[in-house]
Image (cartoon, rainbow, N blue to C red; front, side, top):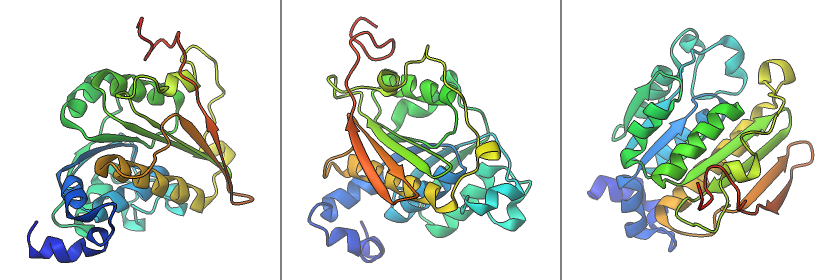
Length: 250
């Protein structure tokens, strides 16, 4: 770190749990963020501000006027622009030392294999089960920690998947891929604007803790946030012996 870095990140360095060594880990990290909507808009700026020098941002969508109620990475003049392009502009203005790889594609197995080759941690900021399962399987395959968040109406949830902890569950242990779920969309169900900020910034916090190696993450736990009462509940998740993604026989 140079003098500018020492000054810019001094408030992190003052924390015994981070210090210079931890901040250097943050600077060297490569964070993959899948989804540049509500959750990604909240998580990515804190990842960038914290000092991560490389972010890969993946999203195939464009900015719509209805997004602006909660997706704070985008502005009114971003409407019609690719979300990853809008996000890249905002994040690199926030931290000029940051390099954002903007990928305007749907997440696919081939794409995840490519970007996870040298990733430190992945943030799943998507809004459908199919993509979440794809990301989870890729992270288990490449043994990259995953921070998975979700938000709808006034309800949010958050968990951490650590494929290197072989006794801990993956996303498929919690939500089996062959189980039928009713997909819910913000466009039909609505979402409380600050909720995505709460869950997204929690995702950023969990990711930074993983990078630094400090504190206790939500590995093996599911945090449920009720935006109506500002109450959180944390439940334990058990690893499924017959999980089609992370069990020994698979």
